[in-house]
Length: 276
Image (cartoon, rainbow, N blue to C red):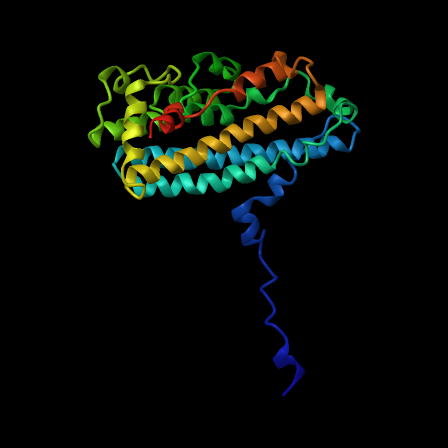
């Protein structure tokens, strides 16, 4: 038998234009979006890591919007599947802090001036992610007034029920006593703790742990835990790189991040556990 019989088949290498891979992934666009503003080699790592974070925000927003839409249709399995996918994506997002988590103040200061007034809190996609969690704030639309598409998307998200609003409405449809003032609250406002919602989750967790609502609760808890870890990892990375100095873009830096890190996402899912 000839040697040629053992050689792998040669892949198709000749294309009339760009490759089908490039047409689908747009890798050439992605890998030429990096325009550093300093001569420090560390800025490239910071810029690419930040861009990767934006891509993960985009995927997670897609998953949570999918879950919210499924809950509106009472399709809990589809919602849970989207939430579980987002857990893996949140893990990857949180790992994005690894390249930045060891920055010394001198290393960060070497290119910090390139950021100017730029700050992570100005991210429109991250703001959509926060809105889906129930962390609504109309004032956070203000930085995006000069970007029509981002502003329109954020304004729409502000006025839509959050993912957690849809969860609470599902609890009510499944027979739990959620009062009208919670079900018909102003969804442009931040979600606040409700004793009635806490009681509903207490009842869910006191029942069959394999029931549909219990599985939904655990998927949401996984999400909430990883959001908390994201905020804490952000806090630690910032504290390590710049201490207690004011943040870029006029933010309070570590002080603002500390306040955010103390807040629980989906609060009744946590407090209900004390009553089971």
